[in-house]
Amino acid sequence: MVIDAVQELQEITAPADMAIKAADQRWAMYALPGTADLLAGHTLLHTDLAPHNVLVDNRAHLVDWAWPTRGAARIDPAVLILRLLEAGHLLTSADSIARQFPSWRNAPGPAVQAFTTANAAAWAEIARADSALWKAAMGRHATAFETWAKTFPAR
Image (cartoon, rainbow, N blue to C red):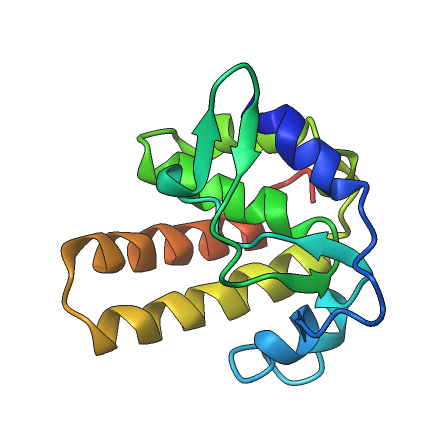
């Protein structure tokens, strides 16, 4: 059901008049020079697919839209991978789940690396600023994901 909800979101273009951050701006300070533009796009992104932001009844509902973003559709599947790692999945199984989304399956390697690098830097900063154990764990997952994305042979 979560995959269905994220897939439905993947098909929504963020309205041009909606006052939300663009992904290339949101992660620009964390991205390597010249790579933030690889995060740009027109899809409405949730970007915070934490378990408490997904309510399930007869379908999954994405709630708590604190970080809505306009950007490349492949970003939400990447965010989902981090949450799957948090839930105990291995990177290979999390990637296998994310590959159900065409935006992730067809993502160019440099774009995947641009996001994973910027997101790892963002989570490292979050973990430094707050000693909560879950934030440190997310920082470790994001770093592992970044390292994996650089070496994964299918990319």
